[in-house]
Length: 165
Image (spheres, rainbow, N blue to C red):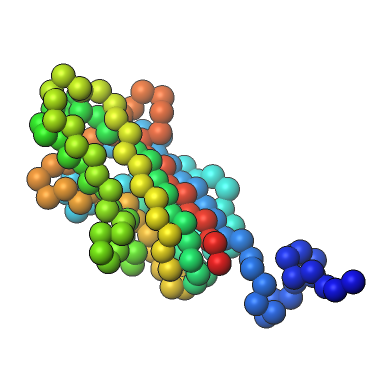
């Protein structure tokens, strides 16, 4: 029988085998994020393969291995504490301090009715090519509104990064 290149026990460091890299990060407390500011994280779930939260900046996630990654997030948007209507929170995925090209990482929600105050979920997901030794951030990209998250025993924001290739 041939050698399997999908099993860790059969894989050598330089044979080009796929090695997993992933991480999940979230914020368990209420947060207000001004325009052009990044969302902070205070919790880390399972991580592997060089995906990790910065020890000096809780808004930066480091990705040490190049590859194609699935990046997804979900945030709770509080329109009761921020009653601006229309309320249009925009969360952008930043790679190495810059927005992704062609609005690939731009996600928004529009709430027009003041009677619809409360907690709303904004989520986004994309697949991007990430160079080695990069950083990922989630940034409030609405030029006129801050984003206030909910704080009722739920996560304010969660980010998951999974290497696909």
